[in-house]
Image (cartoon, rainbow, N blue to C red; front, side):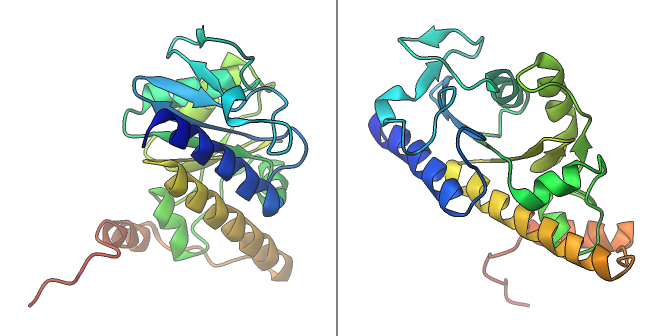
Length: 215
């Protein structure tokens, strides 16, 4: 994929997040690697006011290549990409159910086996920090250790992936699980799966979708 195609892919993801109602106005942001550097949505950017040429090209130290003002959350995106070389794309949204749970400042526990698809027996919640700060970036990096997503207390969520589509798919899955957890909590106290069962599910996710080997 050349640079122009990659820029279009970022903008496509921004639009798809808005169609699903995960971001409104200028909320949320998307980034991905471009070689050794990073492409990120501009501050205040959304699908209606941003062209592919207005996506901001950053060096890994935060230096802007060319023109543009990056998203206010650029510290967080760069910190995640610098900390985790296996991550190539970061999606941050203010999706309703994730935001609602983030305001409880607690992780999403193993109420459903699909929580394991994020890497463990919960989806952590990073502690609250002012948006756009290094403190928020540091909290997000810590929460994403051995995880593919996290909540940001009183703020929203982050999902990461090997590519933009993978990060988008995890974003959709996390918002779905967040909604289901809220529904379950309204009916009572959800049963939480044991750690050993979640470990088995994590292991099974490692081969999920691959053709079964003959016995």
